Every structure is written in C-alpha cells, then in structure tokens.
Amino acid sequence: MIKAIIFDMDGVLVDAREWHFLALNRALQLFGYEITRGDHLSIFDGLPTSRKLKMLTEQNQFPEQLHLFVGEMKQKYTEQEIFEHCRPVFRVEYALSELKKQGYLLGLGTNSISYTKDLMLRKSAINHYFDIALSNEDVIHPKPNPEIYIKIINFFGLRPNECLILEDNAYGLEAAKLSGAHVLKINSVEEVNLKNIIQKISLCEVVA
Image: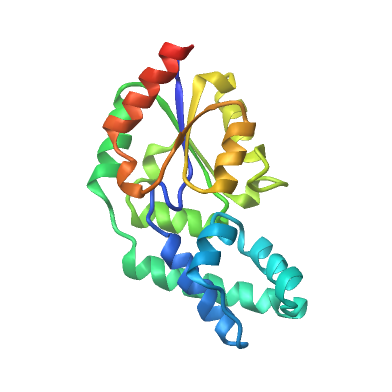
C-alpha cells in the first residue's frame, strides 16, 4: 500500500524552470556569459546553482572566483521572479488537500536552497500541507544522489515501496529511482493533479 506521496518542487508543484533559467542568465550576463535554453533543459535543469557554476567552469573556463558573487546575484534574481510570478494554483492545492484528507503522508524534497523552498511554498500557499519539506541544505549529497528521498522515507518510518515520488527532470528521476520508491514522471506541471496521482497509486498497488 502506498502511504506517502513525495514531491519535487520546481517543475512539479511550481512552474519555476523558466525563473531559474532567467535568473542564472541575468547573473552570468554581468560578466559576459550565458547558457542557452536548450542547455538549461538538457544539462543544468534540476541541479543546485553551485553545481551549475562548477560545470560551467569545467566546460567553458568560467572563472571559479566569480562563483560566490554570481550565486548570490542569481539568488536575488530568483527571488524577484518568485515574488512577481509565484501564485497559488487551485489544481495543486486541491490535489494536496484531498490526498491529506485521504490519509496520505506528504513530503517534499528539492535541490533548491531552504530560503527559496520556503518562499515558493508560502507564495503558492501550500506550505501547510507537508509533513516534511527538505532542501539541498538538509543533505550532504543533493540530487541525483537519492539521499534527500531516503531521508524523507526514513522520517516517515516507511519502506521505499510504500512511497510514491513525483519528479520531472533527469537528475531528480535518478534520485527517486535510486531511493527504491515508486516514481511518477512529470512532463509538465499540468500533469500534477489528483486524478493522475490516484491513478498511479492504484497502478503501484496492483503491481505490488
């Protein structure tokens, strides 16, 4: 039986992919660098900013001494995007509310930092639904390492096969699969609705 539903945040509960892309490029462009939207979606999506910057240094000789400043500016620009665009979404609120009513434990694991996680959850008006919500600052190894999901599963005192994880990008999907839990791949935020989640739960329990 599935007893807990665990969500990624960006690209699952909150349509924030574009916000991160725009914010990072605004910060990089201060020094004449940028990434393409294609590279963002295929290479960088879902990674912590610190990891993205390390990859840029490895691939494009982006100066390592700029990491701290660019990271700080990226965070400021991300905050601006969140304050401007992040709003409650009825489809998401309804799904979380109904799942809670049906007795499921709800968790969240994101590669964002704690401040961004808390801000998005507040602006989306969904922070009160979660029994546990972890950021990349709550683990030693962020996604694609499964540590964040294993930590949530252990917090619930459940076995991995009693949990369903919703993820959208390659790094998150790898982490979810390595945790041993059931996984629902999300291709767009519109797919995160009560009907799809309940259908996946039913399929997991039939297979089990």
